[in-house]
Image (cartoon, rainbow, N blue to C red; front, side):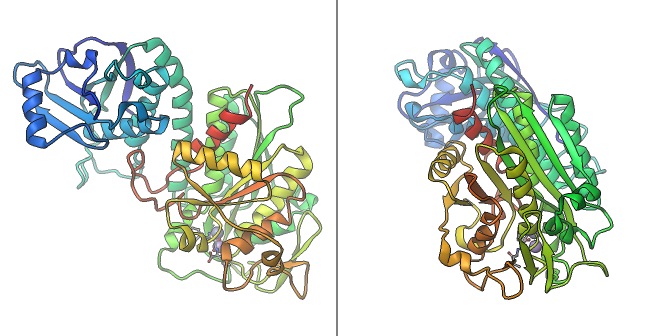
Length: 502
Ligand code: BES
Ligand code: MN
Ligand code: ZN
């Protein structure tokens, strides 16, 4: 598993061994504390040779600097000091972790020129750097039995030790408690997405969710029998071809006022999607082990909120099934009755996520009457055609919720792009033989999928995030090198933190 680096906070003091990281701003260079570290002339020469001016993303490394007890000095450019936002500090942490793999002892000197009043490095900034270090250090290697891989990750080396030097280590430590909770939620989501489907089916996933009870989350697990009683024919129709069962997991974190209605998050948890009888082609089918990315994000979010004891009432619901091929799998043309009473003609068994969510959303709205529901799902390939891998699709019946989500997306850089909905699109899923069919036409595939979901939310403020392009097979970034990104955890933690706590 990931070798987790150790991270501590300390007051500024010149380190006597190991390595040091300094920050240098484009507008003003080093801060006072940072100046004490490096032999100024060595650094000046290095800057000139490397043409380093402190631009964001740039760096200079000096090995065994003359006249210094240190092994390495790394100077990171941060751009204009006054422009740094929370995400920039997280990214900086990622860049720092990337410079030091294992066995390193690193002093990270968080200091910027005093003159830039807005550039003060406080506890929140130090905590974000630390969280960035954790997120970047994640790797999914639990199934690698050989000690040294081709990419040089020697499993027998010790994890790096980072000491973050800052002005107020006590404040940083306090802020890090919350930031670490969120990072751990992200890494839990990544673990769940990366795990292969032979190891993680609906029951195994439900057991992972159950483990949140130790954090004070109330976890209920509905079995097929209970779902049958509730009339969840849409979800159960998807599951019927798999010998590995189906579960609906209901997680509740009650950190808010007793009378406050909860906010709710609902996740698609298809632990493997073969497509069923409308089977997928072989190419990249292995990616469908990640078709539970929505459920993983909801589980990671509940982990984060409970660990940092968020002052909010939050419900997390995940629908866990495997979409398998079998003599008992549902067939194209089958008509199922959802918990809402609405009937669905299943014209394509590969459009299964919406069937799972139809019952999960309806159940959530009926039982909890939440302030809003946000569902996350790796729902359509079409959303990748539309938006690529850098935005998730946002579909919603509520402008305020959409605006808040979009804003949280910009702050966390888990970006969303709102897509259109409306009656024209809704018509596309009317069916000759039932109340609706589970596919629209050839065009606007992510929109007809969203229209389908909307038929199961009634008047509840609702948003659907189509995360097929961002939750799995992710392009590497400063804070993520893993196939499963954990997309959604930081975003929704931020939404809750900014608008629904206290
Ligand atoms: N899980 C897939 C969508 C998906 C594709 C997620 C690639 C991640 C990566 C979903 O269940 C699906 O198969 N959707 C179909 C819908 C179609 C049959 C209307 C699709 O997108 O092709
Ligand atoms: Mn599918
Ligand atoms: Zn799917």
